[in-house]
Image (cartoon, rainbow, N blue to C red):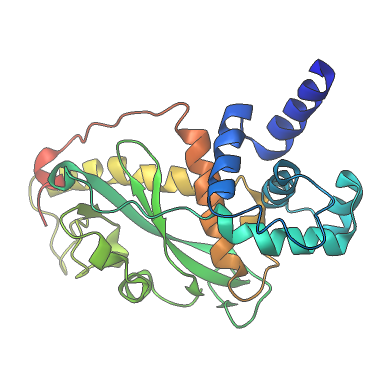
Length: 272
């Protein structure tokens, strides 16, 4: 039995980037959302824990279904069915408006995810068919709060943010974005006026802004350790489910070692 547990631990920690405890929480979330189904009809050839592991490994390594099949002793068609069935159940739940909303600071940024689905992506500035995904991160905990539905990669961040519908769910929380989010109700850096330098103190405000906003870029970078976000082969709603699941697993891995962040410029973060 100990040998089996050690083997399971090696599989989970090596191929998913999660500890056994974090994977157990992910498994519990899938089970609570009906991952076992009705338990009627033809049974799955793998236990629920193994099926969740298949999906987690797929997102982490971006192996093809033909490659994953032999690893788990199943057919590539079964791998496909497992991913299609359980992928949406790994989704991140949006955190509702917190009680201390006035004291919170959420960071917003967009990232390009290369996709194969030409209906979702478009030829964008990274010279690939990509989709623009808006991500909200808590500045204090570095946890992903929400990820919007993907839009074509040629969409500007401001337009993608307005179309995401996330602004309505962030009422009362201070949002911080880069210069691409002008007139979106966020704290943005000061811009130079034509032929005029920044006013005294504005450069310091911009430096403080960059220091705080770097947290969302770091979070997105860690999410892209899951190689599925380097080239997503899913079609239709597959990319949206993938981003949600990756955000969920990222949060599970981040909660084990949270790093508090004190805003270096309170006046900046309290001004909209």
